[in-house]
Image (cartoon, rainbow, N blue to C red; front, side, top):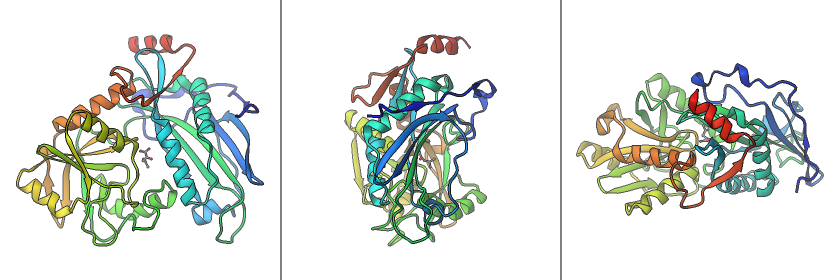
Length: 370
Ligand code: COI
């Protein structure tokens, strides 16, 4: 597969201009990107080329009707100089699922992996070294056919870009504050809530902006039918710890099938903790904060990693969880997941895809000393 992959390297790397102490989330991109096109019923023309603007006909279906899907996954430079990409098989599978819902031709897992491997090999110098930072990998498929009928397009472009990033939320300085949204909804049964498609994120901006203006980092979404059950946070799935059991909303088609969510459930069950995936009523959550039963809450997502939730605003009142500090289990999960990603903790479930890079050990030594 991809025997005809063309590789065009940059004439000069931009790496020297990056301040790794001040990384944002997606404000700087590595030197190269992967591209492939779809026409006449097949994917073709795979290439790795310098990262840069792409041209699209103004009538492309993706621009008008939102026919697009994306993914988010992360790579890390391990303590042994081997690059580890965390659970890319799960992202490949979710991308396929999103493609199906959005009538987009799927990309083979093999192609997905090859695109990542090539980008890591070429741009491993861009992988950040600090805990919490990562080499974020953003695959994207957009409909490129210029036509205005509302129907699936006949041509597409698959792109993979990479970016050195910080964690999505700065939880070193504060736990995340959420505002429960009772008027707007993110998804409804039968919609595209579990699909990683642009429209879900576009629709969340207006309520998100109001939450930000009121001092909250994100909206805590409720179900679209009764506005009664907790769903997710948009940039992450949510978990609540009620003393010795952990509860998270079940996957019912309206929330994202988070890869970190799945990893958290597995790690908690490994540890012998009871994890329930079910209906989580917001009233139950608020009552449990009030009577001390709810001792920790945290979000889990690729971008967010494990983010403590310190406050929840609901019906004009602010409820503080665990004194607005990072809980014990939240910290442990963060350390375990980042430890597995960095190769410090045994990867018992075989989650990492290992990509050896030429001068990885040397790069790692230089980083450790720098
Ligand atoms: C991710 O966690 O990778 C996401 O895609 C969430 C994001 C929209 C920031």
